[in-house]
Length: 300
Length: 109
Image: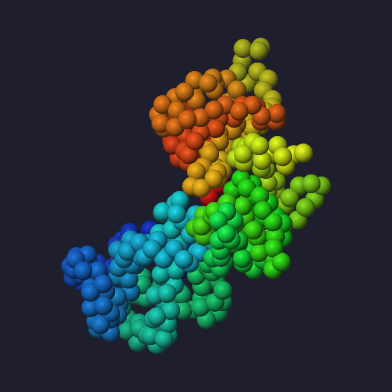
């Protein structure tokens, strides 16, 4: 393959959201006849997405080449559904979706990346068999998808850590148990703190500041919070904590450590080595919620 | 000489007036639980030049809730509103162009 083609390919790998356009521009004229079929099939898929996908899986052996070029499109269409599903299963605290919620486009892209990697996973065995050798013995031109597959399979073989999709930063969902009428217990706080490499005190301080309450730590390390809180609410706060105090701004990894120097907190990233300062936790204004008579008695 | 543009003195290290404003003008919207399902929303860090009393009056009318202004030793005047008005307050401040979206911080669950 020529250098030019390689560089083109690399460009498209980095700009994966532009994949479709690139496909259309890069597919050879030769394919024009096939392309008509391709569009028809997409319409079919739009009509019944899942059915279309399976149908097309069944045909995959017949039209391997087409499948590869089509895969991204199919995923694009299914993505909305997938997002719906994700939203539905709330129990799983997927921390990588923190930012995705805000920036839909990025979510699309990240999901898409994962999808592409998955697709290649499926095809891995096949890919090794046919990609790289399809054009051997023939003197036809290589198609873009063939080259892309070849690139990924070679990359996978030689350094898999580059080809793999980004590991999602996940943490077990917080377990919130109601203790009586007015208190909630955050049972697995030590676990979560360990996963985040943060001292529990710091996390507790943040939780109390955000929720505007107080509480204490019980015998097993669980946190007793004053007030009624649901798992979802704590999850939200935890998400924000992770965004602010755990993830590295430069490389988005969660492998960071928190250090304190001259009253200032710094987080240092373990994977890229960058350091940034983080704001200290401020409680802010606390409104008086207890009865005044009770507060007065407590003050005495 | 000084009317030549190139020779006018310009200090590249002077403060642009943006950075130090940014930290101080965050508007914090917090929520606190009261007894039962009840909550209080508090609004802290509003710019000084605003008339808090008039703002509170507008809040009360638009959100149909009661509220009060509390004097705090450190934070100055803080507006308190009954119920969870966090998104309401944020939308109001943005719509009335009192503040920008990224200058408002919402706390709480």
